[in-house]
Amino acid sequence: MSDLLERLRERGWRITAQRRVVAEVLDGDHVHLTADEVHARATARLPEISRATVYNTLGEMVTIGEVIEVATDGRAKRYDPNAHHPHQHLVCSRCGTVRDVRPTGDPLAALPADERFGFTVSAAEVTYRGLCPDCV
Amino acid sequence: MSDLLERLRERGWRITAQRRVVAEVLDGDHVHLTADEVHARATARLPEISRATVYNTLGEMVTIGEVIEVATDGRAKRYDPNAHHPHQHLVCSRCGTVRDVRPTGDPLAALPADERFGFTVSAAEVTYRGLCPDCV
DNA sequence: CTCTTGACTTAGACAATGTCCAGTGTAGGA
DNA sequence: TCCTACACTGGACATTGTCTAAGTCAAGAG
Image 1 (cartoon, each protein chain N blue to C red):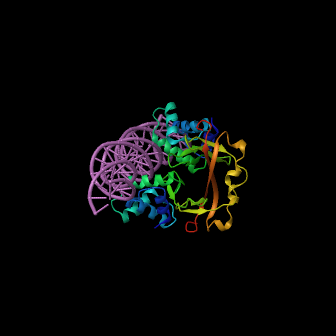
Image 2: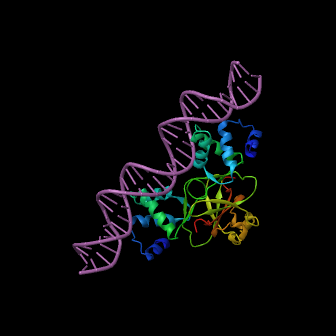
Image 3: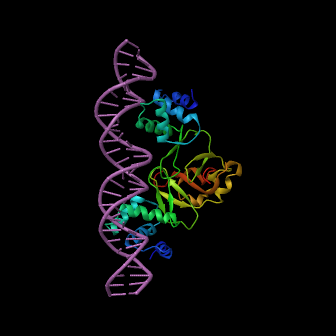
């Protein structure tokens, strides 16, 4: 039983074959998959699973904070199951691979009050960009 | 004559009515428009302008570094003509408004070498999220 | 000024990603 | 075991972006 699935059960989710498969795909390796990649891997285990269900399930997981949605470019969103450890992302500009990284310090502290323009600022996301070893 | 258009001319671009209109729309007020919003405003001035031309022109401006592409969510990219002053973005989680902000320090410096995993890191984008004064 | 040429634009088909809905199925409590 | 609210399916639809073939035009040459 994956940790993620266990937490979903505690939140009162019905545990269906589809949700179990999506949770297992996400929890399996901490890669950052697109919704379509999740669907492809889920289909390998449960051939009838529909695209809508994968999208719904991912959306619900994001809503309750078990999964983070990462928009690294203007294309497909990626889903990050590592929601319980604060981290930022390092993205390859060529192939789109995403790695979790932990920079030093708190990025929120770098934004002085007079640069907040009345906003209630609650989070800072940092995306580092570059080329991965395979794409150099 | 807008500054942006002037710089395009210096780069040897043919100045067509379409490019002039796109440049004027972007340069007009430093709001961050989506491609479709640019197209809508361009159409108001030049009704025949096609979607493809707006996309092409925006893409070219991004390529030559006159405009920055901002992916704040998984939806439409936004275009920021303020490319010659380094800055980050503050996004309202509810209405999507984007403001330019200048945090202190260099965000790249916060990523130590042992957290770069062999990547050649070239840039850091910071997105601050919160609620704007109108949405609180 | 007119001509010429190759860069530019257009319309629309197509692709990728995401959303919605009506009908059907089923998990889990009674 | 049975019920029912919740979940799933398949497919239509929406949004955003890309591509191509054919027509158009900006700007330098003469």
